[in-house]
Image (cartoon, rainbow, N blue to C red; front, side, top):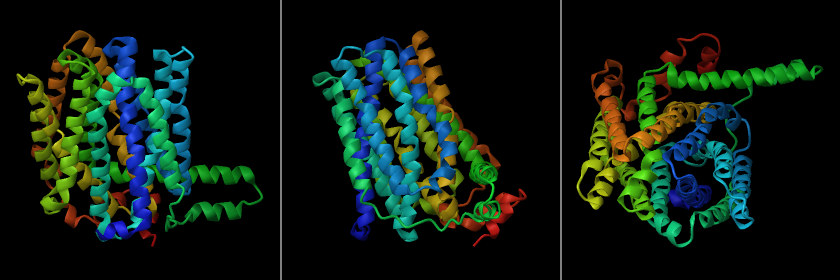
Length: 442
């Protein structure tokens, strides 16, 4: 492939693979360790809440991503995560490992990770040509889901053979290696100019306090612009639905250890996680070949999640464990497809100088309900069987797909092939002040 002749893409791609190994193993190890130490879905619900809560912080990270060197951001976040992960093996060795310690470290690691994904997605258009973006995003999704498949396939066995604590040690090594690869990246600077921020600083060079206020004012202005792109356009309908879907995902992930335990234990837990990753991976792989960019975005999302919700809810009622795993995995295929499509749409339609802000806003908004979903799922898991909670989550996803079918604004969304920067302009320019300046900028 021509894309692999690009050294920067190869470094970013391999670094993404290695850090995804750490992320995947950590996600499995953390939830199982909390369930093992606490013995209740209430603890996994709290763990899920704490691990996903930093998505809200991600909304605030966008303007910073657009301002700081991406290479330094990627390297430093990986190094800090590597050091934090080492705390768990040390605590186990010196016999002071508790549920409370795991729950304390979880949100810190998740907060650091919230900077990585938008930074990588922001770097991608700076090292690839526009015609290569769909392929690049597809490869990133394949890497992401492929690692999930591989790690989830062996995670159950690793937990049984080595123990969840050992996986933390391997996670740490993955983050260290990822940091070394990211350190070799050469990413061109953004075309973003500092606009009013630079002018204000020069005009008030004699006043440090005013300079700080102007910088912060520009920061919050950029953050509001990122939110406006997602909330003041018809894409808001998609975002509302994704919030509900992600809440259902948070609840499902929370009760999964208990549900898997009822079917056979840690090995089944790994198989279910592997199945979901396989479904997403297959969707990401096939997306560039299905020519879905020609279909209206609203119909694409509606059809995808009607199918997903139906399979999601029905999976737990199948009579054999292997069929539960298969149907549940198929439920994640549509999500793999839509994830590649929506990222490509954002990268095509958003000016490069605002891309980090908007990607962070999109990720933060879409995941804003996941912490609540985790708490609700953990609480319901104490009262109801895990299968009932998962079935209810599938019904919620199906309801979102049906809503999109009948919602006129969603149905009128253009196809991804017809989305560009001009498509956003009428909606964002409808709001005065900063938005007008944004679209008049070169």
